[in-house]
Image (tube, rainbow, N blue to C red; front, side, top):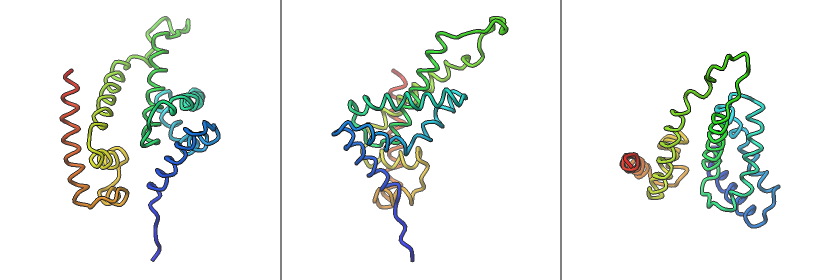
Amino acid sequence: MKFIKNTAKINEQDDSALLIAYKKSGDLEVLGTLYNKYMHLVFGVCFNYFKDEEQSKDAVMQIFEELVTKLKMHEVQNFKSWLHVLARNHCLMALRKSAKNPTVAMEDNFVENGDFVHLDIDDAKETQLTVMEKCMETLPEEQRKSVDLFYLQEKCYKEVAEMTGYDMLKVKSYIQNGKRNLKICIEKNSEL
């Protein structure tokens, strides 16, 4: 029987070690090694928002530049998830900035640029995501990890149990209670 290593846990540990090494040394090569593991995912997020390959490539480089300073200021538990949020926020800010200064070609007959019609919807989604992220932080660690793995990383109960070391019944309980607590927190914070 072949023994299969849990690569997700190993990668998470590798990420933590690289983060600690970068914070201590400020060595951009260490940060580059960490970022390189997820650069394709960052590009995917950017391309999803910009629908333009060159603009997405530029954004990937700009996000790396942001990391240089932001990682020194923030305490990051899960680099991959944190980076996804950073990339998404970067894209939303860029879209918002370009929406304030839209350029219209003469042949467009000064018609409103259709790319920016749905920014109000994006703002509402961004607000909801921000509330959800803040509420996730309020959950007890077991619930937060279980909910994150199950819903955001789309792992099954068995995978969550293996990755966290929690008992299968506990995982189900953590997910159920975490989901309930998250819903209550989101509803409470959405009313404000």
